[in-house]
Length: 123
Image 1 (tube, one colour):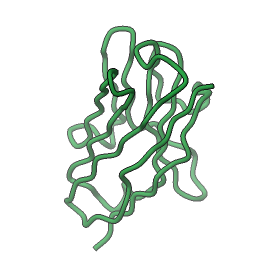
Image 2 (tube, helix red, strand yellow):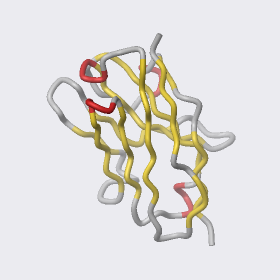
Image 3 (cartoon, helix red, strand yellow):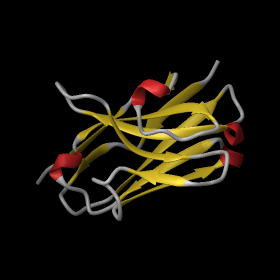
Image 4 (cartoon, helix red, strand yellow):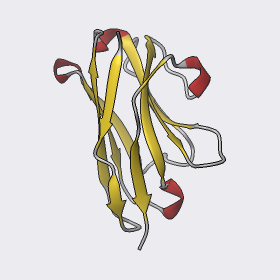
């Protein structure tokens, strides 16, 4: 049973930073790619970033390149999303998700999901 639990969301002012955590269990994190996604009401779930287990490559949506950084600590079974220079349009529920080995930014390719954590960017 693959389990993922997000934390670290909250309210932050534009230009501020947050660090999200994705705690995993029930599988060996080394063997899985972990993606971060976000969703606002009425819109499709959007791929934000992904960390591959196969070759260590990292992927980012154009909208967050240069601002967000994905990282993992396999020993702690945790993946992080450092979010900097936050904008109001980053406001969303953020989810982490797992799939075997290879990265994707398409939500439909991920089978295991966390419950989400709310990020609100507002002054």
